Every structure is written in structure tokens, then in C-alpha cells.
Image 1 (cartoon, rainbow, N blue to C red):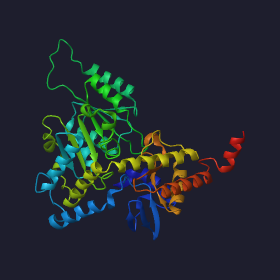
Image 2: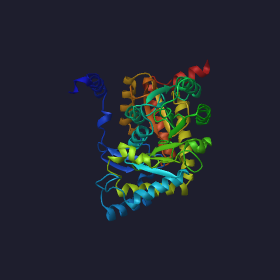
Image 3: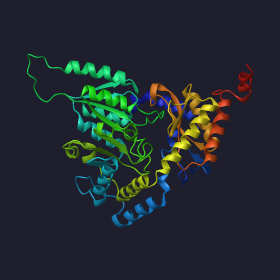
Image 4: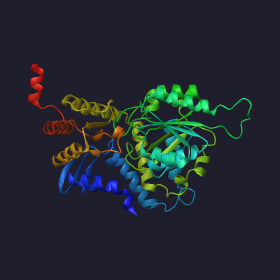
Length: 418
């Protein structure tokens, strides 16, 4: 049955031959948002998406423990069965209020949020326009919807406009033929911060295209919620387009330090999504302890804007340090700082050498990366100290010089002399 995956088997074998297997890394103990023990020794965590460091926040933990003790370990049912507790409804109202929306619905994971939302919003009579670098959950939701999928070039409003224009021309009914049935709808899907390279969508430009062409817009704020904006609402807040985005999707597993996902909106009949979304209807609901911890994390985002300020400074520090060392990085300063490498072999070796020095980052290889690039993906946190970031920059620079990825000190001196 698994013979069809022979190509994956070969690639997996090559990965294991390069040293440790990143798919089987199992931490002995998590000590803090930035430290863990692996194989009996301490490692720095620099690839966790724990942007605000809230996984060990005492108030989040105490709220979670109280819910665990009073409401049990899980709901054992879906939201439409026995799985809706008071906390679920309260968190939905809190998410909606936080984002300035009338309504929100919770999903058990962020992946399911995209899967359930997209598959319910559009069908085979509609058109989905996806940024080419969209997350796998977006592509899977598109596939489940049955809608016609059109990919536009990453972060390219002009290409989106051209493709929407072509779709609109095809959709125009002939003047002599009466239009039958509901007209096709066009839904554009983009992300706030993209997960692999950390680049940010040109959202104002996308909104302008959307308005001119008469489409709907969904923004996935998974990596930008709590990170961007004065209030932490994400890229839509920074871009000043909150009134122009129909649907906001996100996750609780990044800045909020938990697990789960959501969709929020002001559109009429939003409640119908609860009936049409299969990943909502047929999945067990979030455990009360997770709901309680996420609720407190949302409060912290509103109460402590300084967390975002420190995160921004840490991101600039890491990005500037690695860029100054000569690494090829993503185009935008964000908490995701990815090193672009020539091929998978160098990436695997670099990743192993970093782990030998007690630094854990994410290894991202084709075909799961934009343009089939080989990446070492780091994600900085508010909780990282200046000393930790300096240590990471020094270690990466030394390894990069050893592997010939960046020029060594001698090479730099010769270049300066020339």
C-alpha cells in the first residue's frame, strides 16, 4: 500500500544519512519558552513559534489548571454534540471582540480552521485565488471545497488583478442568455506573515484589487496575530484595512501558546458555517484547560503591548546580525528569520552542526518550501535574551564560514582591502 511513496522513502533515507533525524527529535524536558533538554543536554529553542513566550506564563498556567481540575481533561464530543461548554462560547465572544468582529467560531486546530472555513465558504461553482506560497492547510481546504483554484504569484497584486480580470471576463453572462442560478463568487486568500520566509503580504494593494474586482478576502493571521499591530490584531490592523477584510482565520498555537484555531467575520448568516464546516461538526472540541489558557493569553496581549515591542527588537537583532554575517535571508524583518541555503545536503549538515552546539532551529526542505528552497528557519521570541540571540548569531556565523555559506574573516579582510 505504501509503495506509492517510494520517492519519499528515498528522500527520507538521505535525510537520516545526514545525521540526526529531524522528524524524530523528542525533547526530554521543556524548561522554559527558550530552553529544553535533548538527549540529556541543554539546548536553546530557536524554532518554536512561541512568539510572546506565553507557554510558561504563570497566569495562563493557573487558569488552565483550574479548568482542568473543575471541568476535566477533555469534552469527549464535538461542538454540536456535548462539546460546547460555557468557556467555548465565552472564548468565541472574546476572539470576536478582540478582532472587532461580530462573530467568531472555534476550531480544534489552526489547520482545521482553514480546512473547515474554506471548504464551507466556496464550492465547485466558485473561484478561489490563492497566493502561491499559501500554507498546506489552505491548499487542503481548497481541495476539499471543490472550487476552481487559481494561484497567483507570491505577494504580487498585479498578477492577482490579471487573474481576477480573466475570471471576470469568463463569468460575464452573454446579453442574450438569461443567467441561471447563483453567480460565482471569487474569494482571495492571503496570509499576514508567511511561515517559511517571514515575509509580509502587501495587504493594502490586495484590498485595492479586491475592491475593484468585486471579490471577497480572507486573511490568515496565524503568524501575525499578537505580533503585528498596536493592539496585536495582526496585519489587517497595521495595514489599516480591517473594514475591508471579510474573513479572518488564525491559530492559538503561536503567540497564544496553546492549540486551536478560529474564524471571525461580520458577514450575515455567519452561523451557517457551523452547519457547513465538517472539521467543526465532526471534531472533538477544545479541552477546557486549553480554552482557559488561551483566554488568558488574549487578555495578556491586550494588557501588555510591551511584549510586541520587545519581540520586534529581538527580531531586528537576529535579522541584522545574520544579514551582517553574509547570510541570504527572507526579504522582511519579522519574528521568522530564515537562512536560504544552496541545497538540502548543506541544510541538513548545517542543522546538525547547530544542534551539536546546543541550538535547535527548524529544518525546512523541498518540496515543502517556497520555490523549493532549502531553509534553516528560526523563530525568535519575546522571551529570548540578548545574550541568547548573540550566541545564536555567533554559532551560525561560525558554521556558515566552515561550510562556505558565508565568507570567513580572512575573506572579509581581503574584500575590504580590495
